[in-house]
Image (cartoon, rainbow, N blue to C red; front, side, top):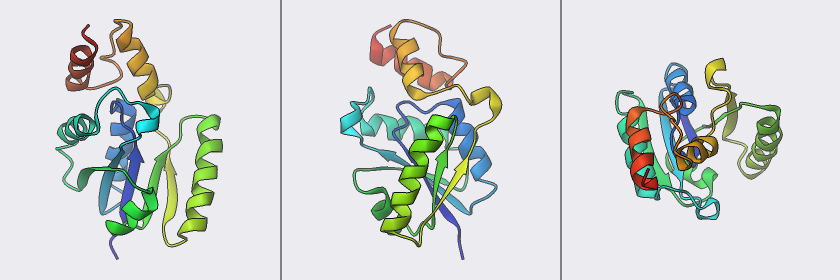
Length: 160
């Protein structure tokens, strides 16, 4: 049986914390699908196509990682792609409360797909896409939090 994990999020933008989780997951799962949610309610800075392109470029060196955008129920996406695991990252207790609720609901909706949580390395625990966007929007240097390609894309998008 292939263990296929879906690592879903908005990835607006992808950070070193996300990349750390993907890298570690590649040693655990046969395949990882980085599923980028359209998330129009969150009003992302980058379009879905831009986020998919950036993320695909950043993760291109991982042989068992695919990147795909989606605008559906995550469990439907996972089932469509033959995934048996939803992979989520945990940074804080606040994350745990939210993720616990999601995992419980997902188990209720489809008990064949298991939720598994990984914590990023300690040096990435404080990084979030929303903080990166805020720093970049105020003209701050985000190079310690995101790859150079993402930092450039942020500057271009924000006109900084």
